[in-house]
Amino acid sequence: MNSPLRHPIAPELLARFAKIVGDKYAVTDQAALEPQLIEGRGLYHGRTPMMLRPGNVNEVAAILKLATETGTPLVPQGGNTGLVGGQIPHDGEIIVSTTRLDKIREVDATSNTMTVESGVVLAKIQEAAAAADRLFPLSLGAEGSCTIGGNLSTNAGGTSAVAYGITRDLVIGLEVALPDGRIWNGLSKLKKDNTGYDLKNLFVGAEGTLGIITAATLKLFPRPRAVETAFAGIPSPRAALGLLNLARERAGGSVTSFELISRGVLDMALRHAHGVRDPLANVHPWYVLMELSSQSREGLRATLEDVLSSAAERSFVTDATIAASLDQAKAFWHLRFMLTESQKPEGGSIKHDISVPVAAVADFIADATKVCEAMVPGCRVVPFGHLGDGNIHFNVSQPIGADTAGFLAGWGAMNAEVDKVVMKYHGSFSAEHGIGKLKRETLKKVKDPVALEMMRAFKRTLDPKNILNPGKML
Ligand code: FAD
Ligand code: MLT
Ligand code: ZN
Figure 1 (cartoon, rainbow, N blue to C red):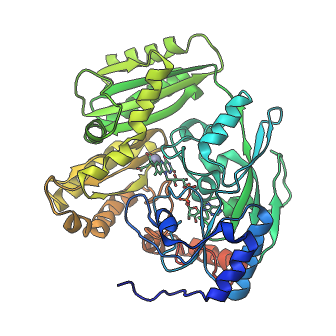
Figure 2 (spheres, protein in one colour):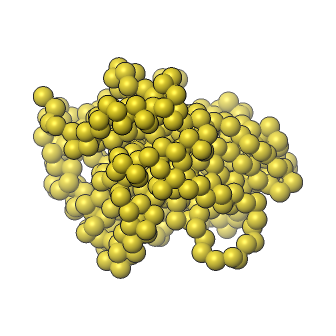
């Protein structure tokens, strides 16, 4: 039986919230709500009496105002693809879904900006940019369902951050509804605007704890005229670092993705994902998926071939294939993006989303692997991730045939030991997925106390009643 809710909300109050959006958009049917209560990794199953689906910024602001007046807790939710439980109402909070805030307000190809509402799905933004012959470079496995509001709120990284930066680097202005019901119109196309604190950066990465982002002005880039994609078999993470250096030396800023994949996790995708095949004839212990992009139509393939052959001479690469068509490049990326889902059928998986200085990645992987294998003999260490950013998803699958619950009971202990290795290399225990509920206790332990106090002060100032995403991050 469920324990009593920490935040029971009286029916009369629920009716007042429903009135703001209209009954049609105040969902209370528990079967309809169920998908919004489950987090993708199955770590959390939340509870809520209601999900509100506001259709414009004024409705969002009215919901927040009423919530502050009545002390009612809210959880903002976009595409529900977050990986740290930040979007889940853990204890009866009302969900505020942004999925009806789905308009692309403007694409300005001359200023290279695009203004969108926060519930627009990332893939739609990429498509709209392409339709204007521009690029919005943020790309990640969940792009078909995550929203830009979620990307901004988690400051998502993804596979093109190595060249274009993380979401924080891709936003110029924001519109945000504040907990007291005021609307901050910070939408701006200005690259240069030195008029005080950079407030937008307070909301980027705030995981819905300071305000609800309702719209954003994003940066656009020229659409590359040539893109070349290679899948390379390599002997070790250290060799991958050699390849990365070489690629940067020869291709400079053209290196737009550089992803490391262990054979273990590739095998899982080959076993469980649909429509995938091993790009190389032989088995290699590690792989790099590398993409080069250029504004020039000519010469990029020759550059990539030169990088790969020089890398082979130096034993950084054992074998490699360059996509012969757009479809083949898409197949490489499909395989890469299926790595997350493909770990699930293999039983319990303990996750670490870490970053270390790029130069330390190989040593980190070696040390952390030893630590995990000593803790759980037979566990399967299957790292992959954004090597170009020093960000590795250092995931550990249970030993074959082991008891899943027993293995997962060691999640915290394994995280603690891996985090010690992360600290040894001056890294971060949360590179791109955020804090949410999953990493809140770790944040308290490892974050600089002065930084934590400033974060709490911002929270108190903007949300004195603690109505926005209580129990998350702080
Ligand atoms: P949600 O999951 O709905 O919410 C995430 C957080 O943001 C919550 O705290 C929520 O309260 C808050 N929030 C959502 N919308 C708003 C808003 N408008 N205003 C204020 N707060 C809001 N992440 C990476 O960084 N890089 C990756 O490569 C990557 N790959 C992924 C691949 C897969 C297959 C999956 C499932 C996830 C991946 N992620 C990755 C996780 C990533 O955080 C999310 O995919 C995405 O950024 C979240 O967007 P969302 O709309 O689903 O947000
Ligand atoms: C990825 O890079 O694929 C994601 O961040 C998701 C994951 O860590 O599984
Ligand atoms: Zn990632």
